[in-house]
Image 1 (tube, rainbow, N blue to C red):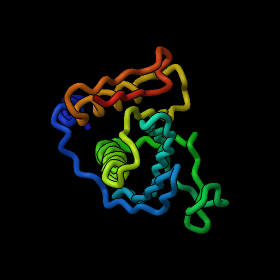
Image 2: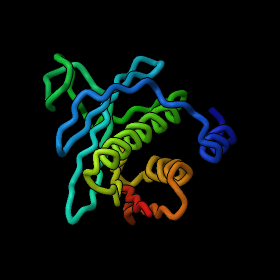
Image 3: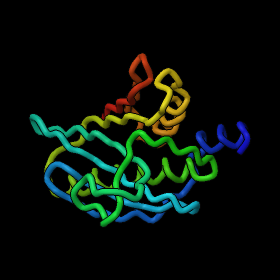
Length: 167
């Protein structure tokens, strides 16, 4: 994938999400699973923290690997490795679109059920080299294009996390 194609995709955000399954829904957690065209299986965790009528989402996603079960609701024989870095340029925009779709679905369910209003979303992009902030910058630009007007998107100075404040 060429830089021009990457910039066009960020600007247009035209990638469609992968089919997504909600596998766990509790008061404080939604967990989704999906598979990419290259066969990588992902889990998306949305932890919810509610205080004063507003909810913060703490979002983490990673590839599932064979191994012991580490989280409730996982399929037998699968575990999550949040430190595993997957470089899959062919599928990266569809992965980002799918993670955002999971967030949107959770927000719709929570707001429809009258639980609370989602005020903030926090994401921690996985990167082995903590000084390399390219992945965080890419996610930030993609998220900015997908959020409603008035949304503020920040990154920590060290590039370790993205914070989205919804209007």
